[in-house]
Image (cartoon, rainbow, N blue to C red; front, top):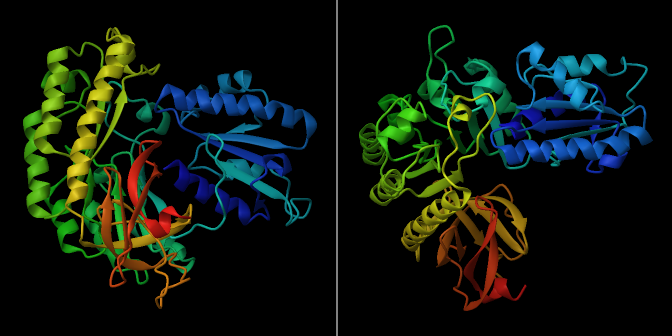
Amino acid sequence: MNHADSIRIGSALEQTGYTFTEQVDNADLIILNTCSVRQRAEDSAQGKLGSLGPLKKKNKDLVVAVTGCMVPPQEEGKRPLYKRFPMVDLFFDTLDPQSLIEILPEPGCAPEPEQALSVGGTGLTIQSKIGVTAFVSVIHGCNYTCSYCIVPLRRGKEKSRTIDEIVTEIKGYVKRGVREVTLLGQTIDAYGHDLPGRPDLADLFYAVNQIEGLWRIRFLTSHPKMMSYKMIKSVADLPKVCEYFNLPVQAGDNAILKAMKRPYTVEFYEKLAATVRETVPGSALSTDIIVGFPGETDEQFQHTYELLERIRFNEVHVAAYSPRPGTLANTYEDNVPLEVKRERLQAVERLQEGIARSYSQEFLGKDVEVLVETREKGKWKGRSRTNKLVFFDNPTGTEYDGLDWTGKLVDVTIETVGPWSLVGRVAGTPAVRKGRLLPVFNAEADTACEVDLPLSIANK
């Protein structure tokens, strides 16, 4: 969502004459788009702000602005930030980039076309070229009050964008070469309840599915209590909507779910997961898990572990609980030792690695449709419809030798599998001998996993 917000803010500023730069030292305007979901993210943002102090002293005309989750929607919550970070000229809401534009020089005085704009989050710089995929925020904020979550405090109440506005934005991306969009919301399946006529996420899917030149539609993140059968059925019916559901369960114990203020039971969740898989055959199901929530006993963690064994998710994003000031859970005693949290997190990771590997084995020898996003370390990289990372190389000695696959759909015959990624060859081309093991970056886990690469790739 921060990435999508940064693109939108950057596009607004481009219209004033600013252009992008990857060199922070050359920037006339630096925007930090922040995350506060976990303490580490906020610490990273604060560290980045501290590093901008010397730049501000060197260039007194430099404008520094901060947006994102570190900036509460309430005006009174912003004032203390100026005292903590005097190098910042403006704290502004992501939904209101106009307040940033208003403090910049008037058109005609500056900026000149060659001036630079750095837009990013915690040190990342967003390129003006969007690429093959794009993120599109469709609903902002959250009306739930999960006891551990700071998002409602930082993003405010739910506010949906109209279908027409979203479709217009996506059409603009498609003209720039985007072939896949990910529709975003803290609770995306709450989309539309606050709009006239009360359209829902399925109605949005049907509208976006009609856009010519767009090939794939993804969506994040769903709330189990808001996921309707109509929405599930629309994924089955619409050819462009990918068969991938992110349904965070957070815990597999009813008492912990109640303490988290999650308004469903384990039994409800298991029925929902079964409905998804029955209605959308071949779909992938991912979830989020928090281990070490205040008061979580060994037995309660075991319930979560057993739920993961039963449902066998395709992906599990696991985090150890960390208290966030302002949340209800911050008033609970954080009584699970850090070492126990780490042990539980590692247990979930080990379990999921085995499950993910078994799912990957099912792809061996089969053809998988891949939308190619980029070339990385001598290999083409893309994803399947079910979000599996796939690598392949240019087939030498064929009509495809030297072809740029960026932005193309290609069928890849899978020859080697790992828990987090697949490696293969362009379907219909000769097989290659297997080579030595090389690490492949796993973007989800920020780790490297070993995969047996074809020799033609390994030698590079």
